[in-house]
Image (cartoon, rainbow, N blue to C red; front, side, top):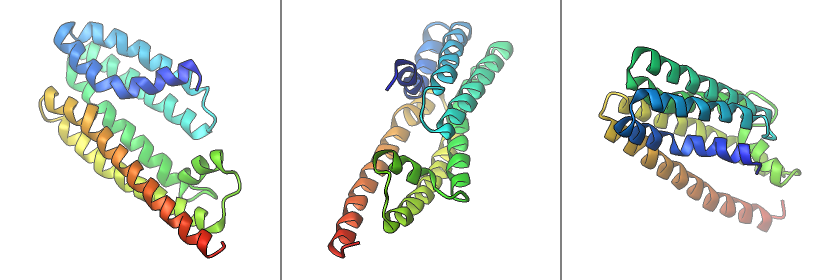
Length: 190
């Protein structure tokens, strides 16, 4: 993974903590400056990804982050920062849902990066997993939106920790299910 791509991925991971800590220590102006720079790096780093859809996500999420940062700075209102996880979930939902009407679903595209020749059962499976992720983005985005009306402490707890734990749990469960499905079809000789 290239350095800017890695840095741009870290922006998403540390965003809630940067907002929480930054607002408590330095105020809106300093947080807006640092986040503005990080979102620019996100957009630049997005150019280094292999899938064009991920480039779009980097550009759109980086642009949305810049806009929210600018609005927070102009109106001196930190609540603008809290909408970023909602926007990211919405963008991911759009990307994954749109891929369901394409020849290859989003999860299939990811799978083909590691295994270019997927059997038919795997293509069907990846389409189902894409639908599961769409549901995840709906639920996670709705919870993220509800936290925008809560204290910054609870917003940070959910968006900086719990949402990642839930995503990680979904990854882990999907991995176990994938291995089971693969074994089942390999026994059948497919």
